[in-house]
Length: 158
Length: 158
DNA sequence: ATAGCACAGTTGAAGGTTCAAGTGTCGCCG
DNA sequence: CGGCGACACTTGAACCTTCAACTGTGCTAT
Image 1 (cartoon, chains in turn red, cyan, orange, purple):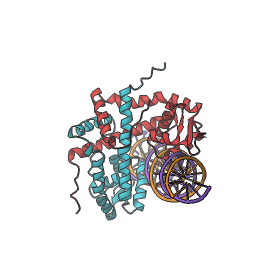
Image 2 (image 1 turned 180 degrees about the vertical axis):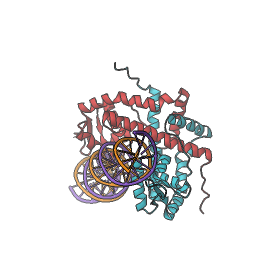
Image 3 (image 1 turned 45 degrees about the vertical axis):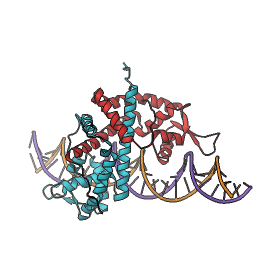
Image 4 (image 1 turned 120 degrees about the vertical axis):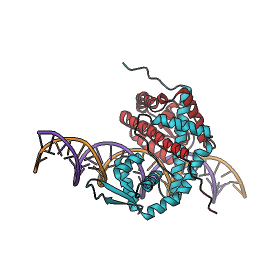
C-alpha cells in the first residue's frame, strides 16, 4: 500500500534548492537591514505598516492578524513588544467587550516613516533591481499560483 | 542630500506582497509537515540531508555550515539538539585539532529515511504541483538572479 | 621559538515564534 | 432567563535563531 514515492527530478532539485537559498537570502537581508537601521524585525515593520494604513491608524487584533497573516498568538506577543517600545497602544473597543484595538502612536508613526526608505531600498536591492520587467511579471504569476486555494490576499504600501 | 526615495509602483507592490505571502506559506507548510510527521523542523532536516550525502555520512562543522548556509552558531546549537535526539554524534577530527566532525548515527539515518517521503510530498503539494513546466523554469531563473553575487551554491537531494 | 593572527567551534543571553491551554465576552437556542 | 458554543484575545513554556563574546588550535614571519 505504500505508494512509490515520486522523488524530484534533477532539475526540480536544482529549482527547489535555489528557491530555498534565494528566499532565505532575501528574508535574511531584509531582516538584517531593518534590525540594524531601524531596530525592528521585518515582522514588526509589517505590523506597523498595516496599522498605519488602517482608518485611524488603529484596528482590532483579529483584523490585524488577518492582514498580516500572523497567528493571534504571534501578533499578541509582537504587540506586547511594540507597546513596550512605545510604538503601539492597546485600547478596549468601546462598542464590543471582546475586541481589543491596537493603535499606532506618534512615536510608532515616526519610527515607521524613518524606517521606510531604507527598507524599500533593500527590497529593491534584494529583488526588483535583479529582475527584468518580464521576470517581475513571471514572479507575480508564480506567487499567485503558490497562493491558490489558500487564505485571501490584502494590500500594503512600503 | 536625501535622495528622493524610489517607492515601489503599484504592480511591484502587488508582486512584493505576493512574494512575501507565498514564500511564508511554503515555509510554514513545510515546517509544519516535518514537525508533525517527523518531529523535526525543516532546518534540521536539511542538516541531516547534507550529512547523509557526505562521504561517510560525516563532515566538519564548517563544511556543514557552508553546505546548509547556516551560521556557525546556528549550526552548533542545532547539532547540540540533534545530538540530544541521538541522530548525530560529534567526534574530534584525528587529523586536525581544531575541527570537529559531525557524524550521522543509524538512528539519524532512519529518522531521515522515514521523514523523506512525506517531506517530498509536501514540497510537491506546496510548489511543483502548482507550477507548469514553464513556470518551474521561470522560477529557477528568477531564483538564480536573486542569488547572483552572493555565496556560491551547492547540491542536495530530498 | 614565539608572538600574533586567523581559523574552528562553542556558549549564554536576548529576542522571536509556536503550541496548548486559559480567560472573558457575545449570541443564540430552548 | 440560562446555558453553551464560538469568538477574541492572552499567557507560559518550549524551542529556535541571532549576536557578541569566548576558547582553543594551527600558521607564519620574525
